[in-house]
Length: 444
Ligand code: MG
Image 1 (cartoon, rainbow, N blue to C red):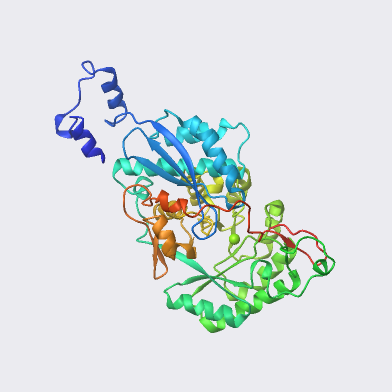
Image 2: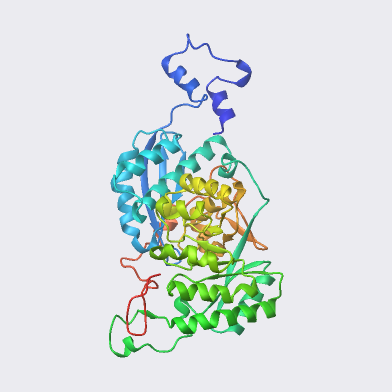
């Protein structure tokens, strides 16, 4: 119910003028203090786990005492999905009982410290599910899409980049040309799988029986020498008009990453992503002294302590946070506003392990902030089954993303259908497990 109808229902039409406070019953007084909206209460908070495409997705549903009024938020942390479900069902539900869902900032601040220890990925994701659901509720109640509540549109749609990859330069070029034909102007180019897997030789640790069969191997020197050649080939084949991005995904030694980025200067990358692991943030001043290639950083950030100083020192150009990993729309808007003053643009993480609700949250922010940079588009948004389980999933056309313009975040969930795709009992994906030739573990 939108606000005008609510006011009408309560006999508080705008034409009726102000209510006489002295005559108002206490609850009427309260209604005036809350802009005429009747008190709302949270009645239930629950996690919904589903894996329509095999990837564990967690969505939080916040229900209220107004029949049919609920909100949805993304709490997807696929690598530790079940602890997030527990953090929501066993703790946040109890914490939120009876609270007014209108007070998003207050609920965020109090939930944030309710565990005393904070800023970890499990609790931040649970908090994000709650936070995004509260924004969804606020939008539904106001009869407006969330981006309107965040300040309205700064652009007609959201430019996206998609992934072009292959086992060799020819395959990468073919993949990039396919995206150009689909209307994309921005593309991330990658050689091989994670860690350039598939373009590497066989490691000694496998022959020696060290580690597990599933462990991946990366030959850093093969990777470092292949990427400038890939950029040269793609630029030559696809021209100057398109924007090229690349993800180092940490993993190589910081000096090696810096040297490779310098070698990419002549190909004018739009940005190079995650040159260092979070443990190696101290190398940024050296990188900045060496090259002005735009850098995107922060996919692995969880805590404000990780981004505050580097952003205010302009150590990178794009902030690349995974929004559910920092606690939702409320903190992401603060990061975006911080970036505006330091010329840091946004490039929110948008992979397959963000639910369609989370992609919508990214997109609503993308519309509303001036210092938007680019949005990663996940292929899963195009999947039919995903659109069935999550009606209202954002759409992508000619390289632009659009949200469903319904009030709130615009994405619903078919819970019965979602239940047909349970999350696996064990974590099946081990892509983070990467080793050097001798078997030493590599940090992403
Ligand atoms: Mg990345």
